[in-house]
Amino acid sequence: MFPIEISIKIFVFGYGSTVGQDADHKFLKQSVEEAYEAVNTKDGYPFGAVIVRNGEVVVSCHNMVHKYKDPTAHAEMTAIRMACEKLDTFKLSDCEIYASCEPCPMCFAAIQMTSIKRLVYGARAESLTPMGYGNFISDALRGTTAFKKANLEIKKAEGDDAIMAEQLSHFNLISFIFQAPWKMPKDSSDHIFMKQAVEEAYEAVSTKDGYPFGAVIVRNGELVASCHNIVRKTKDPTAHAEVTAIRMACEKLDKIKLSDCEIYASCEPCPMCFAAIQATGIKRLVYGANAESLTALGYRLFISDALRGTSSFGKAELEIKKAEGEDAVMAEQVFVKTKPLHKKKKAITE
Ligand SMILES: [Zn+2]
Ligand SMILES: [Zn+2]
Image (cartoon, rainbow, N blue to C red; front, side, top):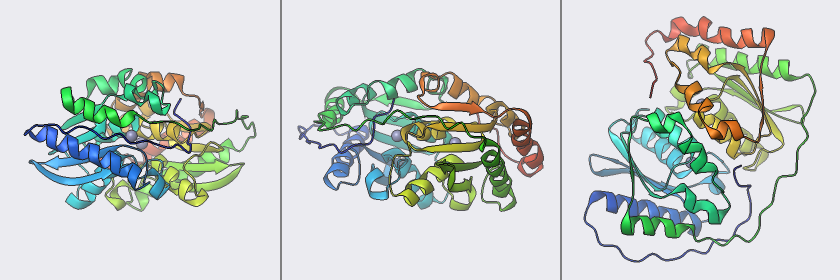
């Protein structure tokens, strides 16, 4: 389970000076400095990321979850969005990313989707336990076929660099606010909201905003956010329907936890979106099409493999409902009906 949003007081420890000339040390150090900056500025949690191309920094940033009230504004996600905007692309295959800590499943999936060629990280996910993260991140990552099969060079910092990054985790937790146990709504509004998510998916294609995926967030039976994939419109590779819906809902509700909300997705969420759903504490996910139905779009089994192979998916404290009958057919038809518009789309594989 992801830790619950909380007011925590963080004591930042200084880190000793390290000597090293190589680029990895320099950029990793910068990502660690960003992590401290996140806390000093109160922008978010102590995580930093730097994206480098041909030895030059493209962007350098930190976790902005608090500042933006956007639970997906992790350092790596923010760095990817900024880099894509700056370079006017949504593929970063000529870039490397330096992260102060091992990326969470959401960020890891975003790194993979943008084809970043190399990841260097400082602290291991396990060093987050002082912050109350348990083994959520390491379990989720290490259990995944997505992680194992990634076509990405992954380097864990060693020696002084590792110590520098891990010192970030000496946090003193003052308090945790645990989520109250929730009761599952059993009303029959699932069809209405699923239909809306599917309509959004068609909208994504007809407006050319992005790919055929829609998502709707609902609280107490009322619509909070309804949107579709806007990857093309925003040139933001993280602007999937679910992530966009989460961003919109958090902005609207002025908070970064959505534990009283449900999300309806036209298709089974990808690992990035699934991790974002988990991280925001959304209590219920209803999805239409199976990830396997994306083969029509050339996605092969990337998403289903990545999801189903994860302990994170298996252990999610989230009610997950797969649409059945007519709702499932309605959602699966999206890909068949929009396929002619995606003939030139490249296969997305690991
Ligand atoms: Zn992350
Ligand atoms: Zn997604």
